[in-house]
Length: 247
Image (cartoon, rainbow, N blue to C red):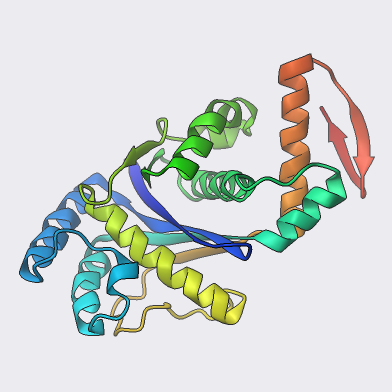
């Protein structure tokens, strides 16, 4: 079976980047899309955008949300806090750039799903400049340097689409928005309940990951060594804070 993950992002400038979305098989996504689009029509909406509907009646958003409960397999959410990443860059001696949170979060996302499922997982991201550019630029290098087990479980080259055409991306938008709100309000995902302000009936599996400064340092060192191998074809070895590094 091939699983399909639809992922959207939600950024709180200088605080946190959230990547979140749902995973299901193609059959369930087809059924979900029909139901979601029908309900949009009943509500006289051409497209659902959470930021535009946050002050709408919770019952309306909850009515759409029921389609998610009926068809998704699980939710995955990655939080990439900005300050620990800047600190990690300073520790390692590499410059910080605004695209780094997207690099870190997207790699953590794909790594996590490849380890969760024994079947390939195909990704579809919301089509926008930052995330689409980041994933397209890094995917070949990521696959080449990935652990063989992870590489075997990766799906096809990620796709990008417009949420107005892809109903699952609208569901991902809903999740990314509310998990960003929770992070801003609580600073963690320790609260196990769903973050939505309407009644939730189904307690489906949720996988929530927060990247730490230690995670960032590891990723930055791995990326630097991969760059050295590909660019200069050199091999180096050293120890960084008790960790043996081989390039």
